[in-house]
Image (cartoon, rainbow, N blue to C red; front, side, top):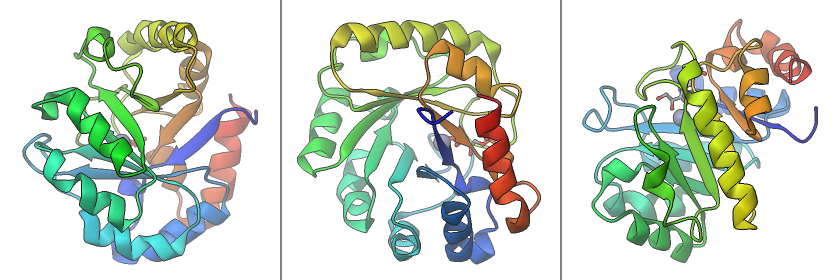
Length: 220
Ligand code: DX5
Ligand code: ZN
């Protein structure tokens, strides 16, 4: 299936060889490079900062899909934009003013994303539909790769798909967490057009990346 895109999350890559890993997953057919930024405060894990995004930039021409699980996010938006992010996604709870944060991302010339945690209601984005370029539905609680897909989020994905279609705007619908060969079709059928996959992309090491991405595509 070619109209669905895959965004491998480098959270599951070998952090000691991140440049090579980005290059390898790009060459294996990634549509985006999904970069999970965690601060040990908004989520219970710490990962990557703008310096690493900048260091990775020369290793791939694919869009960098930067998922900020940090609070506050506003003080770091410019740094991630300058480091080479193409999409910057924030969580409404990162506060204090989602609308202003989205305006800031767009003013930096980047695509603005909003991510909804499993317990976050759709109403959180009802009044920013004119500002978002991407909606990211979490199908795990953010913080770690390798968790199980939450089926409870499927109706939410479908409802957001209806909202996007009704908006008349071009808005990507991305699903993140627990995507495997068996859950990818569920996200797809509910209306997602970008699937994040960490474990499913990087398992087995570099020799397996091409087959991993091809197998995901074959199952959706
Ligand atoms: C979780 C991250 C995800 C994670 C997905 O907080 O936002 O992007 O890397 O990993 P898998 O695909 O292994 O669930
Ligand atoms: Zn993510």
